[in-house]
Length: 461
Ligand code: F0G
Image (cartoon, rainbow, N blue to C red; front, top):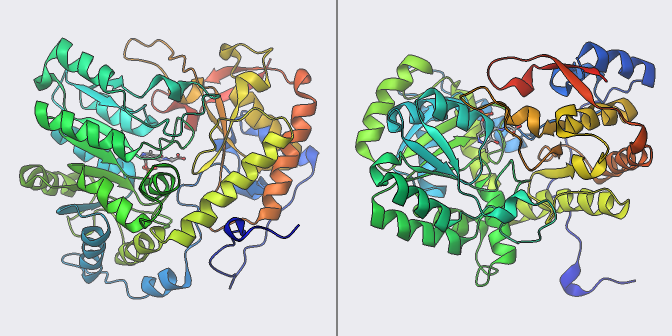
């Protein structure tokens, strides 16, 4: 059938100039590899992986323009030319006044948390993120989840599951007083919820509320352009606006930001902290020297900052986001057709499989998502990751968090794989789904103290 004018297909707004050859393995090799990795996909060697959907972080393909900018890197210790290009890109596309580069997102989270959190203060946020919460806790803060309830339900079709529940925030403020709130963390395209956006309407309401109570909004802008794409597509009045305009509007309604540039901004390493507050900036400029490096490089090479400046520009291109998220939706629809339970609506950076619905015979203490990720690797060499009870970790009293979402994340790197790779991935998930009743749970045999999901080890039950 000839498609309707409005429904023409998207295609990647680039073509390939260089390719990276993939490695394949057989089942016996994969069984050995996953056992040696303690059933943790983070501990696999990438040489044993075929299609790597562990993360979209630092795994993007850079463009020819980014690579050529790389060669212009000014590697001066102080006052690097490349820093000023990065600063200019951040001013232009995001609009924050002051910028501190860091080696990656968590470097920014560390510095910001240390400056802005006083011991015993609450840090409300639209769902936790692993590294963000750990830095808040190490700084003496207490995280409070203020995302809307719909976000915790994989089947709820709310178009903006990243929204803040203002009533939850108001209850917290009424109970403890605004002075006990360090700031609100607002993540765009909430990772742990399945890559779910907030709406501009919700952000405007949050902005108004926080102005009344004198509370800052700190934007975890790791995936801001992906959030902007969903606003453009779903929110009344935004279809005619460009992603560049929407990104700027989001940033303008927030007071500062932490950024892992390894996602949206299309680089392999890098991040920054930004603020509009001169006192916070002054302190950050002091502290960055202790943890990252001088304030004009923050742990990055000049060439990294060059590539980031170009990547920021490319990330707000409408055709780029249409193809990027188009590919994610393609994989999700395909998996749905096979009957695989996934988080809906389909999010921005990957497909999140509902492991509790996939493996209903396992209890959460048997780590269903961890077990499923291992099983998919075993089937095809496709590497995914757990986003459930292992990632959630323990609270300050040492008790396990039991997150409502027990997910396996099929995370899609930007500009790396083709639609045919997505077919192979979906087929592997479907074949594992067919024999799901025979999949056993796991027991944890080694548990690290911080961010346990990275290095924990398991055995088959
Ligand atoms: N915030 C969000 C929302 C993230 O997704 C990440 C990283 C960070 C902060 C930390 O940034 O890794 O540069 O230090 N997420 C990666 C992931 C690790 O796989 O989702 P970082």
